Each structure stands twice: as structure tokens, then as C-alpha cells.
Length: 170
Image (cartoon, rainbow, N blue to C red; front, side, top):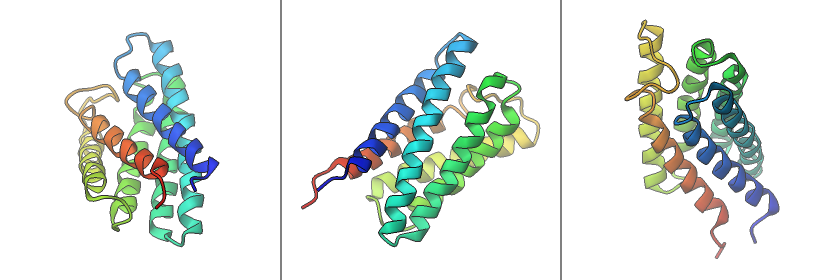
């Protein structure tokens, strides 16, 4: 039987994925900051519930990975109101923690291989982006091809997690 908390976590991931991607295409600073704030809160709530779920199941590495991802999302959320340029320091820390969290969640075979693969690709793209920014590249959260290339892989990973949460238990 699927729990209500699994459903809430799935909804949070869906809102986070949809609003996060949408924010990369919004031209208005105020609207982007609003959309990304909704995205961030939804992901923090979902990740907190996933920490509890996997901790209860005894899967400490996955739980710690979701906790690390939550910490990264919190840094991103903190920078939203500052605007794109001013948010870059918290953005670098956030995507670095996203990468670590995604790697931890996917290090074991808890999730299907394709989900783990999309998570690893996303993590690698975020690590490269963070390093480029730290080494002086003038990248913003909306820059293409990096870091923007990592977002679709992250959303595909979210879709996998949502599917895992919502599938019928047999």
C-alpha cells in the first residue's frame, strides 16, 4: 500500500521538476525567482520525506544522499531572491551538494539502472559546471550548454523516483 507521504513526496518532486525547468526559460527576474522558490520548497519537502522513508527502511546511504541533496537545494533556495548573478556563490555550493547527493542515492541498486544512470550524468554535469565557475568561467544558473544540460537529466531522475514512489506494491 502506498503511503500518503510517498504521494506527497512524488507531488513535491513533480512540482520541483516542472517549476525548476520552467524557471530556466522565464525572462522576468521576479517571475523566475518566484518559480524557482516554489520549485525549491517542493524539492526540500520531497527530499525530507525521502530521507525519512529510506532511513526507516534501513537504507542509510540513500537516506544520507537525499539529506545531502536537500542541503544543496536549501542553498539554491537561499540564493533565489538575490538574482542570477548574485546567486552564483550559493548556486555553486548547491549544485555541488546536488551532485554528491545524487551520487550517494544512486551508489546502490535501490533504484532502477536507468534512474541511477540519469542521476550520475546529471551529477557529472553539475560537478563540471561547479568547477568551471570556481575556475572563473562566467556561468549563471541559466547558462547553456552548462549548467543547463544537467537539468533534463535531473528531471528524468525525478520522474524515476516519482515512478518508484507511485508504482503499486506487489
